[in-house]
Image (cartoon, rainbow, N blue to C red; front, side, top):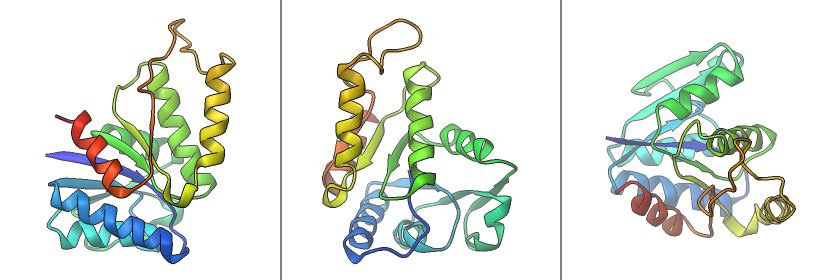
Length: 183
């Protein structure tokens, strides 16, 4: 079984983001992937979990004690992490690929740590940004600038290959990339 870690907002957001999360959740289940997520039953976290569950997928939540009261009750597994660092580590450990849907500072913190861990060769899992409505264009520009100016070189002294992370414009593009990488 393959598990996809999804970092995203627990906030109620614009319908265009809900639509993309819904479609991505449907595609995860349709392609027999299961979900590892922050465990919250609110916002986009709820949307994606609903779609995966409705499609027959398993839900593995990794919540944090502060958010325990918002944890989804019907998850197949729910871990309550003692810290945000422990939460990220557990999500990475339990997943085969990682994707960031739209989100705030928490999502940005999570995905950038996962990138840093890949950069320093702690894992080699696919990392994807679902760039719904160009949400991550500013970050994409910043990351390219960091790479162009030598700030994204591996701390192990090796230049990075082009496969550190991928920006997908649509849920279908994201799932196709995941399928290609997890063959």
